[in-house]
Amino acid sequence: MESLWRRGAAPLITTGGPARGAEVVVVGAGLTGLVTALLLRRAGLSVTVLDAAGPGALASGGNTGKLSLLQGRVLSRLRAHHPAGLVRAYVDANREGAAWLTGFADAEEIAYTRRTAYSYAQGREGVGLVADETRAAAEAGLPVRRTPAAGTTVTFPLVDAVALDDQVAIDPYAVVAALTARLIAEGGDVHAGVRATGLRVLPRPRVLTSAGVLAADHIVLATGTPIVDRGLTFAKTHALRSSCVAFTVPGEVPDGLYLSVDGPTRSIRSVTASDGPGGAQLVVGGEGHPVGREPSESAAVGEIVAWTRAHFPGAQPVTWWSAQDYESHNLIPFIGHLPRGGGRVSFATGYGKWGLGLAPAAALRIAAEITGVPWRERSPWMRTFGTRLTVPADIARGGREGVEVARRAASGWIDAERRPAPVPQPPEGQGVVTNRGGIPVGVSTVGGSTRAVRAVCPHLGGVLAWNDADCTWDCPLHASRFTAAGTRIEGPAVTDLTPETRLPR
Image 1 (tube, helix red, strand yellow):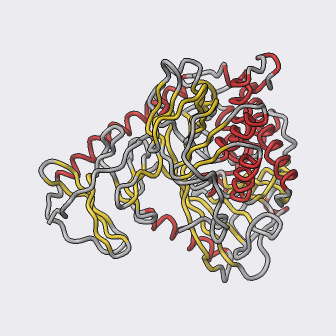
Image 2 (cartoon, helix red, strand yellow):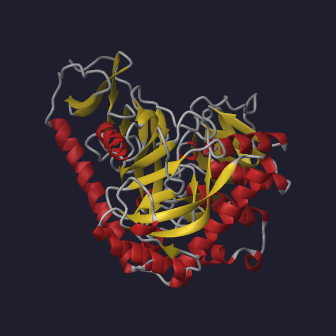
């Protein structure tokens, strides 16, 4: 399915002709890549942006459209193991990114609304979490206030909340479309359908792509997670996937931007003519989970639908979608020079689902580094992020993820061995991994066509799992994803799956 924001939107016009090298080549046409490219173009540099699927095709066009400095439990989780200064820097990064985004929206006449954001508890066990978030937010300088249940009028479970006024609801795909048009109008190039497959730094930086080799003075990887393993970023982050459902709802819907601090996570926002397209009045999200590790993605979407119908009588689904983001083990994004890149390769990842504010912030820092803005003239949060602390809790969190990756790597091969070919043809929308000659093979039926692919991720050899909601093959190790036919969608893998010429019958 397609996100509410992309559903019915006019096709984006990108640059025609072959992609060319430039002073800066940006890989990825999401918010990070497009904002970085626009900033560098305005600094007088030539810029080429590449994206295999096109601008805003993934997370940037598939988030909830909530631009908030209050983000569920993020601040209290960060403060639990890090100094107050790092939490303030995180808030300041989001604030600067949000200010840039709304300033751009004003200049391009993109409508948005100002709302109150709430981090709320659904049950009594979440009250302490609300208290923790209130303290962390206030310490970081946010003018938050506690809002008990008696002060709210909502139809869903809410027993306590912390509130922050003057946050933003916006159509994220409208921002992507305006960024693409503005960048091209100001002399930048944006190419869809060009996949980057690698890079070289010496003797001169260059990007290896499906359209040939593009030379550059500097390369920016704005690809969600880097498409090269320099620095082992894939092992320092973990990928999270969550779903959203847009509904028509008779009667009133809540005006605020709501995100629960206790489980199951529920993200709620209304949609108006001033901050989104028509056709729906409510967006509800949640059911976040590590990529490739959910028994049934479609069941998770069903949970959102059932919950919404229970608390908003008459709600009818219009469309649903899922999106993926990466979270660093210490919750602070990675932004800056890629290790072993000779100072010529920049990257950003680890936004933890808050890319509407953090992506422009990352772009501001990357642009400052490329254009040579002196260290002392950069925003203080940039300097703080550059000297980020790794504490025992971060190491432990990374260690737990590493253990889980190793377990999934082993169990995937073992499970495939237990299901030898032949297997029955999967029903529509389903896929199964079988074993043929010691090789895991994924068989799926989508759109009436049954296909078979080698179900081994080309990144590090994880056995893929079937995603029954998006009808994709997902890697439970480091979150690479592929279509039923094997075409690479996202993640650290850069090549497609190998098709099987005959079905394992």
